[in-house]
Image (cartoon, rainbow, N blue to C red; front, side, top):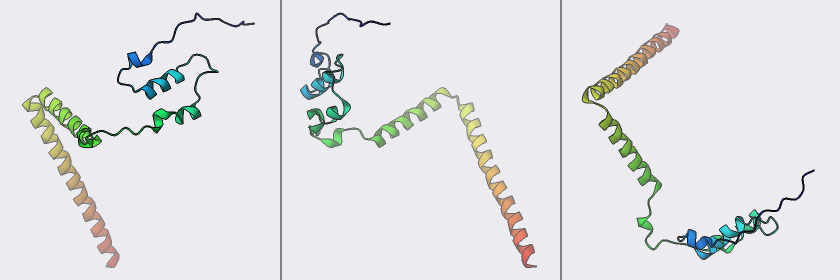
Length: 126
């Protein structure tokens, strides 16, 4: 049978000094959620009612905040730049030629399917 385990007592660390960008309410909520004693630890329901979630933090100038579109555009540009830098001119020419060939193949397949379908429809009316 397993007996009760006693752990060494440590003094609490001031979380505000570690996370200096965190507000007083934020450090309080973090401390309560990280409390080792389950009887003193905050529950999820009580945590959602904590004053940290009641605060309204608004930026002074909302336009300076990055948007999702800006991030995606930057990411696409970065990937495009990386892919062109890592490939030689011959590789890029070959890649473009393969794309043109695939496009031509799709158009040719479409024309063939259209001609077969058109011939079939015409044969129904004869």
